[in-house]
Length: 393
Image (tube, rainbow, N blue to C red; front, side, top):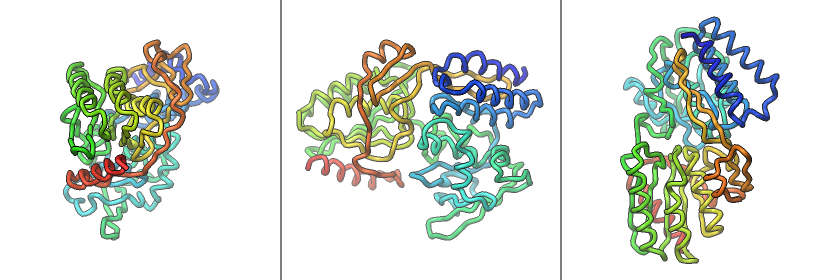
């Protein structure tokens, strides 16, 4: 099978259907399609994938993008952006001294310059680009395309470790691993790339201080565990109508917000002076953003948004689905429906079940900026207590 067939899938099943492309000039589309076609004809897979990444990034819609992770090979370093800093989270044991350090440069090129050069290949908001961008830092073909590498046998990474010292890592470009082993399709920012939530609900009762609900995912292929978790959370919230709530949706990458509506209703029906804290981060996407918008619309100033800006804005295109590109091995994520949770607008692409729920939430400004630098349970518990105390005042 030829990569031309991969491109044909995009040209026939994505570009005419995905409404996010309707504001992209035809001339721009044709130019990027032609570039991808030339690389496909030359059987240059990585160049083809990078061209398709640029093509699908044109609308600036994060739900519409190429996911190259399963199709490429990368150097054995796992980077993720924590706050605004690119951090080394995992690597071969020989690089253990640099673990947890901040990336300073690659081949002498400052990381900020690389991020700027990479922007045209990455879809969505600045925060989403920070989530999906680090894979480009270890993909040798991308580093050549970004002007960081000339195609030599080695690539040098400079990492600032906790003591402030600089560690230099020299990697052989032939020493690569499958991209998906270090960079999951739904990036969560954890050190372990294979991390997945152990349950759909974790509860911690801090007595009169308040109740913590951790909701790591709204996506449940089995369709029962999430419903059970929502029922449990709903019952808990209704049984404690007067105490503050702290809800953690950091790292929640997607799902179906309609299945969470009973919990939203229960939270909204609590005491009129009940305050709710919502923890979010750049790895918070899709249904969790809608969750935040609905709570903000219903609770107003009683909702405190804590963390960092989420991975998408309130106006975006979503739904749609994925397409496997069988020749190149990549995946295309495309959209089919318009969402506007800022102004409460809909259009003909918005599904009726979503249109009837859309509200004008306005903006979701952070009430407190916080970036987690540790998963230590004791540290988090102290932080949770402090937050609940602030909600009580």
